[in-house]
Length: 336
Image 1 (cartoon, rainbow, N blue to C red):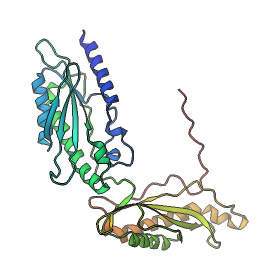
Image 2 (image 1 turned 120 degrees about the vertical axis):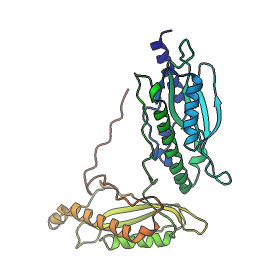
Image 3 (image 1 turned 45 degrees about the vertical axis):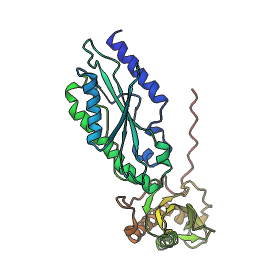
Image 4 (image 1 turned 135 degrees about the vertical axis):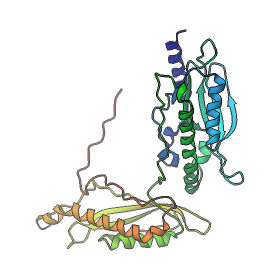
């Protein structure tokens, strides 16, 4: 078998292996890791190495992950299949789930001296993902902030240690995954009661020119909508509907742990006819709405700053479209 043919078969084997496994990029969007770990092209190897023994190759990978904080668990080697090395990141041996990751290496292509020709390093997967997905959001945030930097460090160690053995036709195909704290839904707050948070949000928007619309909200619910009206014609009742959604989890004292706030309004909503007297008000609607929205977010930022989830920041989301824009046509379904 030629080297080229062998490489092709090894790559195809990796595709088949990963097709049957669950990688980070396949996780549902209600999971923190799905928002952060977005490796593209996970079916392709991270790197390929030559002129080192399989023992040296495996030792390099194992040492890199151990030096970044992982504990070696096992290495499962099977004939004509990638070797899967299992590591665990011990966060708290008494109370918390410890992330367990799988690192696949392909050592099936060897030269006459049993050296890599080449050996492939692949991306990391997580084996106890279902347990992690079921954790409270604050625990997911904590584990993610420990796990992703540790994985990045391990790959950085491998890139540095193995650079003299990197196959000339391959580059090191890994980009750091940790981009800092990212919230699941929106600005994230802890240590405040949901009724207090609701009242502060209503005040922030009322003082910016929005009119709250009362609704029967369950203040113990994990999801809560706050509904406002924004005047289209300041001299008339009624207006455009603006909504906030609060997604909440609570600590033992019933305080937010966290509560996260996201906009949930339709910028394409159908607005009432302007009429002759309302032409100017309609023409200025978007500029007035944008200014009022910015003021509301600034009010929110100032009033709730002390309750922001640690290490997270306050953000103002980008608008999908100007208020009252024509609704775009549905995206055609691709036919193959």
